[in-house]
Length: 319
Length: 222
Image (cartoon, rainbow over all chains, first blue to last red; front, side):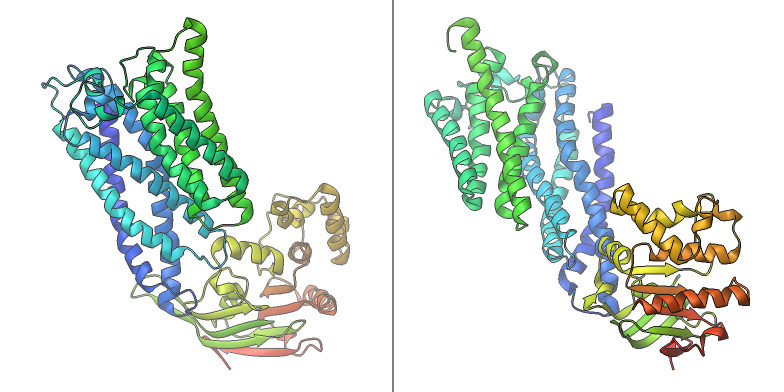
């Protein structure tokens, strides 16, 4: 088992999350099944006290879990130096059969945990806590995903064999590779760019039309199309190499850690975009969510667009 | 209008140590009324006050103030309710001893972020009303018991609350100061405030401005 200080920190945190999540899960089930705010019984008052405690436990698990995703990526990147063949986090992800599933699960959980926090925040703004039952219901579902993530993370770190030579990102994210990911590199750049800017244009149009559900939906599509375009097209301009498509290398110092900004912009933009559609709140809050979504999606688009443009200005050619 | 419906309050330190402070208490207090809760120490008077102030929640039952179920409020909303509606006078005054009179009285205004002029106007009004203006800059710990009680009641009134709750307000005062405090309560009654006093001081039981006296014995209203 690979036990660098970063991995150790993640594992210790996971043990803490595991224990507290189990407590929160047991109480959540109880609250979800028996909650009735209109009741003035002793059992309901007890549940109200417990709901505050439980929500606080969940809140702090998720508040730490959300930014911890970046630390997890940073850790993968850091330990890549210990694996023969790995040049960045991609090599570590690919070193075991769990890595890719773990990353996908972490992305799903990232949105889910952030949504729970937003829901809880909204719930606490109302005297009659309209979302209490819903938020504990969501946590019950999220609990299983959280547990899967924790277990998968432990299993992945345990399965990493530092004696084993792993593939580097150049081999994993190559158009000649035989993986499902290589399919996206064969897509035409022009098609991807039309989809990418077209999708962003739709976000802008639905922002002005204030169509919250379609706005949320276009943000959901934007997550997928953005990641594909980033890996397939924009990444090559960040690396200034037409054959390099790695989604992790630009997290490194050599690229001024720009990857963190890229992913943070994308996450915040699309998360608030989804939130505007999936969280019933005041008009003021929805309007705020719209604005944050548009701002961060815009920053994301500007940041990515600047790379090919600057490359063209500097070199007079496209890759 | 304050309504307590079938209130039970149990303090449970552990499974073996369980105190029933209130047992199925129902009580209705109309607006502008002065009500005295009479009973021995430990009878449950203070528990009723803390429930009305939303400082604690009942074990079962309901507290409704002006149609709002305050026993159902979360801590955040309970604080706002308290800030806007309740003035609490404690037996031991609960002042901050090293602060001046004016700073103690101004404390409830801090979360409101009022501008200095408005705050000073409110301060001047209550200090005048409760005859403590001449001690505005004195440090509280140097004041007499009666003066401290006047500071406490000025602080309780600076937000102009509709409800004044007083928990054994004369327990630390001599008879002269107690009578002067009663005069203050009379003045507050004339301003149509609802006043609930928990006390076992006989001075309160035959006052002309007191609308009703409720006796509590071992957590049960008689």
